[in-house]
Length: 589
Ligand code: ARG
Image 1 (spheres, rainbow, N blue to C red):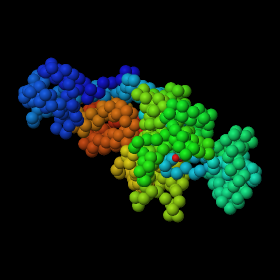
Image 2: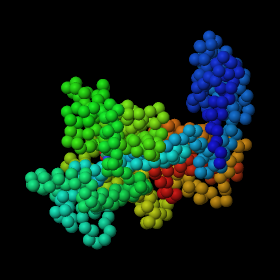
Image 3: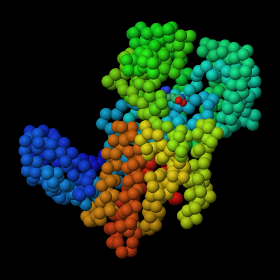
Image 4: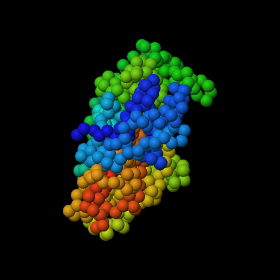
């Protein structure tokens, strides 16, 4: 189906044409169209243009009005104040526009981006043999939403889960496993994600105790790191055991999050080992990196420590070891030259911003990034507890992600159960909806604030039925579905000849803005703007119900059909928008 021209775009076009007819020297000037409380739109651009052309703004505005053909789309246009234009749309244009969106069932008239590219997005990157925490939740939730949104506008998206699967700690773990060979055996066949993690935790703690108290073990563990880096097959095979065990756990958490992570997209730090040497050689030969105290470093004028001395990015340590930066620089080369990315996106904690700033600048100096290939860190803030401090358990430990998710599901299930009888839900539906509502609540709370801000993890607020929560949106959706089921013979059908009530117009004009919202959200990587749009949509729907009955015997058939059509389009828009945020909309709730 073809994409639908929005009312905003049509009005914009008509005004721009009228403007250039009234003031040819203005060329293609922007009438600066806004939604307005006084009329449907207000255009504010004439004042500045009149000033530039040394004309009287009200006179110019009057000339523009004379040039605008009113009729099919514009019902009314008038000059107000010092030279604003107030514009009212015809009801017919609103209904016809929405009918065109409704007919395009898959995309609701949302166009594809004009110049799509290839984005490689780095998100959902937990660390092997370690518990996932709320920071990993944010990266996964935000990253997954951005993937869906970008794909929806036609971008080619390559996902990369840059898991922490390499480093000196593996020497200790592998050595311990060699000396205690049955610690990770799966006795009863398959293990659950939880079991896998608890096995890893137990092993990690025991290995740590040995490492800290037994000098000889420490020496053996260090030697094991060298074996690992040298690619000794036995050592690598055991390293793989840790990776596989961890993946069982990761996948169980992603599954709980109702998120699809594909194995082929998991390319951890270890995946770039073969490139590290060459990355360093290229940086050194080009002079981007220099030797300093035996280490290979990149310096920046504006990165200094508290003592005023420059703090370099270390790409190779003086002992010859590679760190996090060498891996990220190699990953950039891979993503740019092998995956042919035009954009590199990193959904990573704001506390790593200095690292990425230095890594990107280094890659720019090396010529790997340039005007055609851009890198951007979609930095996110910290998750705080109710007390406003970084989220910790009472014992001061980081909160286990799984515990949080389970609690959210439990609370949501209680909320769902309370209403279940009225709706006639089966036990199975209660359990399923409890998951969708609980996980949706966690995702929505994360996505509805701008990513870079910190936010409070407050489950009571998250599962509240009133306010800016996913549950509110899910209920709005389910309520429409219930009306559609009760409609009997009546079918949703647009009637452009009908006059619309103010609440219908408001809802309609907002529905028309879906495509523009999506374009903005995709361009700015700003899912919170989509959440805000959807929340407003649900709020307008609530006002519409207050003022307009849908299934009333007093309504003529056309009014019933037109209202069913309006709410059905609202439901589809809610469903599509929520799906882009990774949130389900149950049919009955
Ligand atoms: N594993 C890292 C962590 O848990 C995040 C990795 C971010 N991605 C990257 N390319 N460095 O903090």
